[in-house]
Length: 331
Image 1: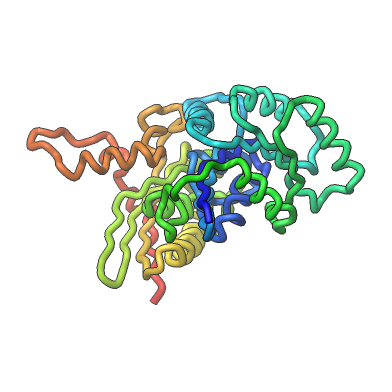
Image 2: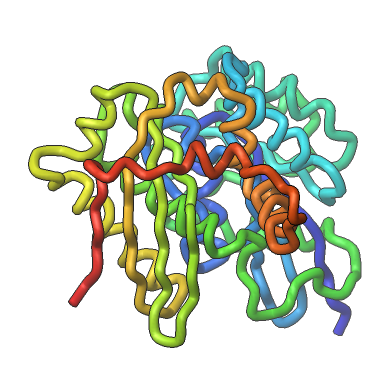
């Protein structure tokens, strides 16, 4: 039996369902999900392992007009996702009317020269006549290689989609071990789960202003100790995150710890801090630290420091605010 493997990039507008689809197909949660737009900030890979194939799904930030340093990096991440992939898949929310954002997405995918699939997501919310109209509209606007109506939430249409991808992938040995399900380092996963819980626990402008950096990640025999800082841009946002008597922060810590324990398969001691970093989304140095690809490079360099090395900027930025400290551990 021949073995097929390759890379599928999934792009689309914010909240189209990219991360939900990746999580469903991988069979476990590797990408955070919320109703807030632009939750995904980095490209991440989810690995679907089968007996006869390996599909590497590249989840990407939502396509949008970049307005600050952070959003420009997010769009760069989406552009990098096109490099070396076998199939590009544009996912759209079929329950929403076609608009300017969809036009922007269509123009954006035209830069890809390989086969492009259209995934009409959330068909469980759409009546069939409206779905057929949408298929006709998109087919007239662009020559998609395949069009698949799906529901990333329920799995409807996903088996046919996977088969369509496999038909386009080359015969090739797997790129990753059969027991690996993502390319993300564990410390980045931990930071993302913390950020997700902070997003879900807050409102208005706070979710967009939240960033998380893991300061220390220590693996011991029976425990993983994680120390992380949650950054916001204003004092008012910090107060919302902490909540009355620290209740909001405790909830964030407890829920994040449980998910981190589930994915690490180990007991976790999680220590969280909150710090104000004014206008960090416009700060190139801060935004670069959120890219885990760059984080890995920095950690590699830190393992072999020179005698005359000056302290990195990250050390100064990560100074903890003792008044906002929350230690969360299950007895």
